Amino acid sequence: MAPWAAWLVVGGAAFVHGLAGFGSALFAMPLLALYLDLRTVSPAVALMGLTLNLVLLWQLRGRVAWRHLPPVLAGALAGVPVGVGILREWPVAWLKAVLGVVLVAYGAWRLRRRPTPGAGDRPWPAALLGFAAGCLGGAFNTSGPPVILWAGRQPWPKDTVKATLQAFFLVLSAGVVAGHAWAGLIDARVTAFYLSTLPALLAGLALGAFLYRRVTTEGYRDLLHLALVGLGLLSLWSARGG
Image (cartoon, rainbow, N blue to C red; front, side, top):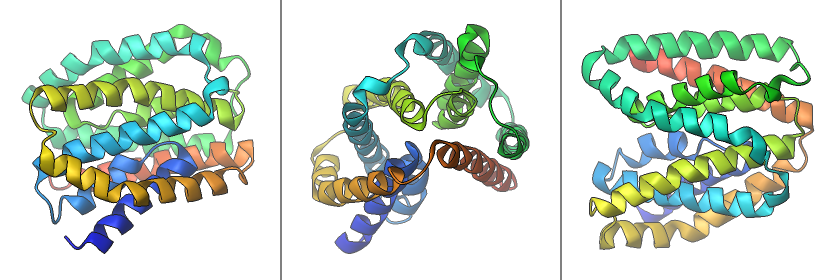
């Protein structure tokens, strides 16, 4: 893969993350995997995600809704081994199709309806969505959609939504990076690729964050729900191939 192409992909992924607060892996993984070994791509993208989460969380460190995080994190940690078991036993196409339908329906509905004040004060919905995120993470390494759904339904300012997403993803990405390191996957090739694309990562993040500051809270919330619809359609499309 040409260095300029890798920079474009990594910069584009960081731009998406800087604007929305998520989506870098969904953007970068399939494009980088077309030209590079998955054993290089996966740990490199995990390092990129950890970097993005750290930078954004530092920038928004005073905005995290810490008291709302324990239920969703506990649910996610409980869901990961279940997701691994589901991956072994259930047809992947069925799971992707169900996920796609739910995300498209919910995202489209939320685009027409504003969140109810106080929705973030109930722990059980957060725990259930966290559990779903953990299941998806264990099965497909895509824990984002349920957490985006959870955060998007809260009556919070956009900085609180984005910051809280970073805190959640930071815990998961740190675990993924630690797992890759323990398995010996973060080698010299992965480190070299990560460091060589780091300038593009930071530039894309800065541009995305710059545009984010010009989006209103309602505009950002709509962006989250549009992302859910897009992720749902992508899940439905991938279900066609099993």
